[in-house]
Image (cartoon, rainbow, N blue to C red; front, side):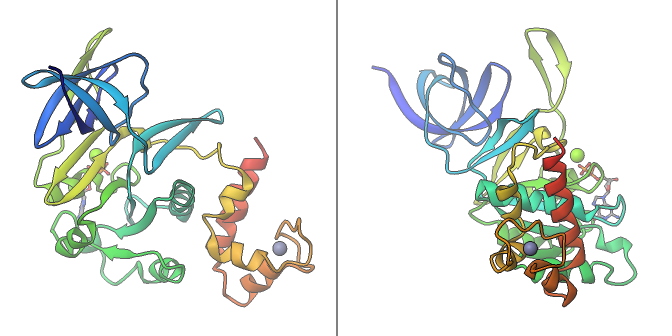
Length: 287
Ligand SMILES: Nc1nc2c(ncn2[C@@H]2O[C@H](COP(=O)(O)OP(=O)(O)O)[C@@H](O)[C@H]2O)c(=O)[nH]1
Ligand SMILES: [Mg+2]
Ligand SMILES: [Zn+2]
């Protein structure tokens, strides 16, 4: 009799994957043309002690997409939280943060911010930016991944969650993942039909009642599949004010009858948030 059980994709290669199920990991082939990503819940048929065949994809709770020429492509599934790493060096621009908040909002994933490398700072240089995001109810942490500062507090927050860390190259994603998982994160060598080459794959780490997804796919994520209506959902404070604009098709760029501009002037909407909203909206239109 064939044994069928459910599991979760913890690593995905071009035509095979690794599935965690009931405390074991199975190297699996994929039946037919099922499109799978790391984090997917699946049904597998056990063909051997540690080998199986993925026969069915179960419903995704959330899907993180990247877009290429407006066509969206899934890169990870069932993520509950996106941790946005912010550093002074390399400098993270606020547009990066707001873009990820917008992506999260549209994927029903909870974003939060991790200010990293605080050991390099003399004073609380993140104070102002932190306030901007706490004002819109985004959770923030100040840490040093290298020296384990506030890592316990962050780990507590990550319990029972499936999180992906995003940040510029050099912001400390690997250092943080190591600090949390206690594992050294290396790029893995893997082989495919074209021969053996070194690249990194998407991996889901199951540790201490939390899941961390490490995906190279998020490096150059674009949001050109999002419509204007979807972009504004990354800016809830702007959306709230926009409901009261006099003209229903208000661009929020001209003074007349615009409650968004009024809120910007009195400080209810922060300048950087407004500027990034206009920037991302116009970027969308110019395509
Ligand atoms: N001083 C300091 N350096 C850090 C911290 N976190 C990461 N780094 C350093 O920043 C560099 C880039 O880190 P890495 O984890 O490779 O960044 P990634 O490209 O986002 O994966 C490495 O030299 C790390 O040692 C931190 O909290 N403090
Ligand atoms: Mg890295
Ligand atoms: Zn307006």
